[in-house]
Every structure is written in structure tokens, then in C-alpha cells.
Length: 192
Image 1 (cartoon, helix red, strand yellow):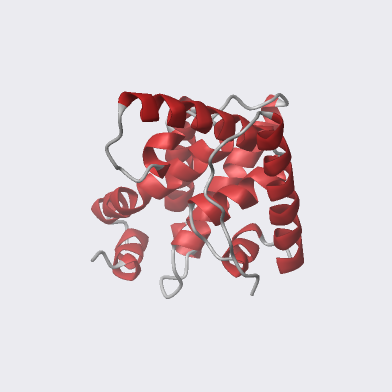
Image 2 (tube, rainbow, N blue to C red):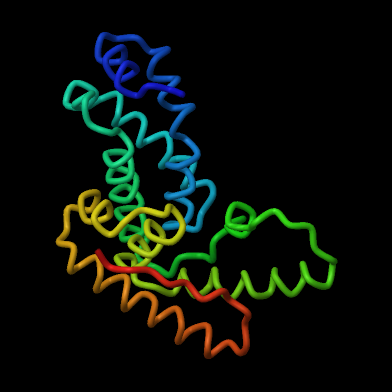
């Protein structure tokens, strides 16, 4: 188990190896979050680098006694949001999202083709959301963060998170319903 606290302290003392260990420990989470928001693997790789450059630049402001992941989520979502807004166009559908969302079960080629078609619809549906809704949906459903954690990361009220999640789900349902029948597992959650 990697201890972020000690690695942050070592990085604050100038130990670049500790920064590398932090990178190795958190890079997948940062990349997945960026990819889910931007839908662009190349831009997500750039955002991954930018997030850790900012970590290095602002390491002295990081409290080693607090978890690092919320800070990284906030930086990543802010960088991705800025990129998407700067592009000022529709986001391409996600690349390879099905791979890291899949449950890894072996399927027949026919079932895989059907699942791929369904995932394409889901990816397009997520890409059709507003950036604000997409970020909340990604953090909640893909990164499995609580509403309170999302509120802290994005520095917005809990009610705003709930609202964006609700309207994002409604938009996803409407988009998917308009695309025809799709077999998506029902997701239930409680607002706390």
C-alpha cells in the first residue's frame, strides 16, 4: 500500500522519485477521468501530464494529512472542463470506455457485437451531455465517488451535484430511449 502522505512530504523536500511514485499510483485515475470528460485519448494523456505538473508546481500548498485524490480530481476536472470549453464544439464519443467499464466476462462474437453497439449508444449519450452534467455523471458512475465527494472536488453545493446528476440521468435516458431498445442495467442510488 502506497502512503501518499509520506510521498507528498518527500516530494515537498524535492524528492522527484517520490513524485514519480505518486504519478504511478494515481495516473490511471487521472487519465480515466480526463478521458471520460474529453473523449479524446491524446488530450487525456496531455491532461494527465498537466495535472502532475501542477501537483509538482503546487506541492508546497498540499496538506500531506489530507487525501490527495480529491485534489487530483479537482485539478483534472478543471483542466478537462477548460479544454472542452476552449474547443467550443461537441465532444467526440469516448474511446475505449467500454474496456475499462466492462466486467471482463467472455462473450460470444454476436454478444460482443451487440454490446459494442449498445456501448456506442451509451458513449454518444454521455458525450451529448453538457460539460457540467458530464463531469458529475463521470465522477459518480464511472469513478464511483459519493455526492459529497463530488461536491468537495468541484467546490459546488451538494444540491447542485444532485441536480446535475438528476438532469444528466434524464438526458441520458432520453437519448438512449430515442436510439431504440438497449439492455442497460438499472442503477439505483441514494442521496445522502
